[in-house]
Length: 307
Image 1 (cartoon, rainbow, N blue to C red):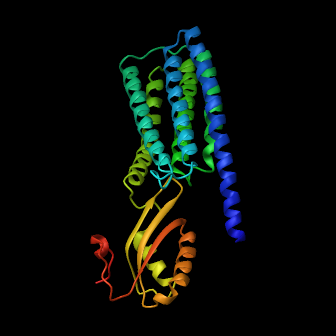
Image 2 (cartoon, rainbow, N blue to C red):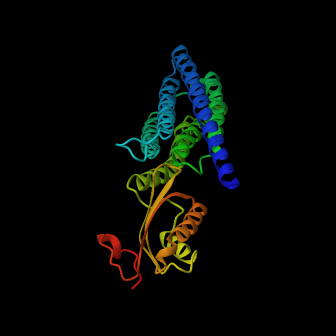
Image 3 (cartoon, one colour):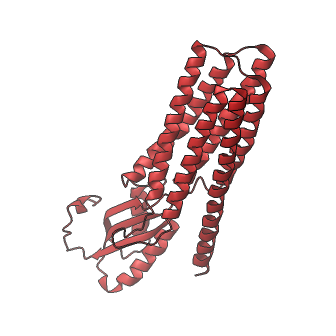
């Protein structure tokens, strides 16, 4: 029981921490967008104005993530019996798509600059980009700890980390150009950064699509899970009709048919299985018990049977 209480306390602390992280991130980045847009208009810099637009897309993605995060905490309804937890998966999918669009925009701009090298408007732009590094890196740091546990948070983290890289690229290219006059450095750094962002974005898109299609969440081997569950109690003869899917970016669910001759003690077996599933990070499980001689009516029941 103590472990369960500790888990709840940690979960509540994590929710409060993430809620605060999203709000701080949105506020900081919104202020930076206004500053960058003002500086761009004042300095007549297309680069700063377009970067302000790009940063505004980050604010939108953070707002979408926060909205999904809040939705996931609402209670279930008769129409949405799992609540709105799946919205976190949709938000991570949306963020992956925005990242890919951002990569496309950076690549187009970089190739355009390769064809038509433009002088960069000196130190003022480098200073503004330097502020961008601080804002984006700090916001990314807010999501650093939780990014491995939640795909939605990972999406927010990747957005901010990508923007930090873009700002670093602007500063480095600005310094090199001011000393050498090699304007080609600017688009080359843009292309390198795009490739780095693209690799992470494709992984996020793959994981998001997998969860959207109720695929087995990453990190769970369904056959290994079946074996571990069967070995957890000697009275279990077989497990079939085993399904695992994500309710949200942090919660997984399972259904399974358990074959046992000891039908009188199913409560004990069920308790053992639930405890084992908690260790696997699966807190929502529906278990159906059958005798060996019973035939399952579900058409999927042949799936996973040992022949």
